[in-house]
Image (tube, rainbow, N blue to C red; front, side, top):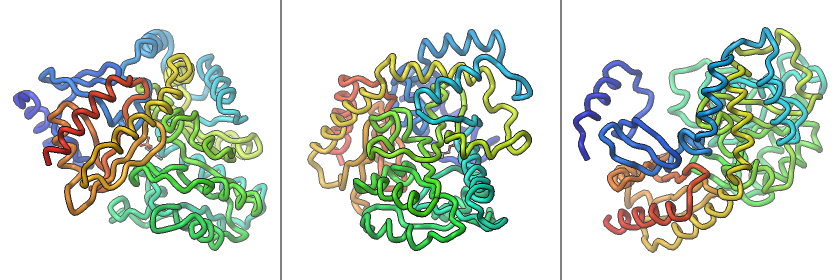
Length: 411
Ligand SMILES: *Cc1c(COP(=O)(O)O)cnc(C)c1O
């Protein structure tokens, strides 16, 4: 692979940019569907999908049309005024999700902050918690974004070192994960509940932590715990939502309904940043004029794209495709016979392949896959994530499996 042009841009980025990421050394120029091309014209299959933000595929023609039409007409207004695209988006999202009310922001972290504010106001004004005492229970290994409040309740030292002091009002319980049974996890949540608890905030499947899928029934038991104790159950489905796990929302695998839902990433159809907090009117109506906002949140351009992106989830059959091809992909990965693979797990087209740590580093494997034309990203040194756009085909998965098998057997 030619490195001539690529080196130039990499050097420039390293010279002028903050080094808060460590990208694979490939400079991308173009995307179409599941494919990406670098500046030298090399073609890759995208298994990262911008951390699951690219469910619809790169530059979906219908979304390109929508962004072009709407940006020529009206793009940014602020919420000082009403717009048609925003109204239509709210109607679409409430219809599809079954939630009564939506508050839009831009990034995932902002929508999480919105959920925290909503939960606290509900806690003070409806549940009757004394002023400044509200507590939210979170899970260890969580990832909810990068604001100072959010990293403050992360258990990942590298996310928070040197960024304190942090906000109070968060306590940690155990996620249901290997080394911790469902009973142990639920018990640890129970122990943290007191009269000041306003919400439990968790990811139904932990993505950044390495596609950690809790035991069946866990979410159901958390739901019951919340009901018994008058606590809001808030789910961060920024990454797991909108078809990624083979259902519209991951909570549908457990037949529950949360009190609050946080969406982002794929909501913008791989075109625009847009995020949302959804809940009942009971919770949402604690926001009044002046209590929360965002200049760009709910802008007509992002609203139009997001509305179209929701329609395309169904038009292109993305949710069923994620379910069917996710199972296929997983079974193919599991049939690779090699002892460097410790476990293959996940739901839908959201798959984590854990390596036996002492054998091989996940980043090195990603570099080898890059050379075969497969863009993958490791998490926590030992897990490789496979999260292709949801419009991937069986044929493309077969091609990827061939490359993955080849690389693994060469080690
Ligand atoms: C990506 C992600 C976030 C943060 O979203 P940003 O848009 O990067 O702020 C929050 N929660 C989960 C589960 C995520 O995957």
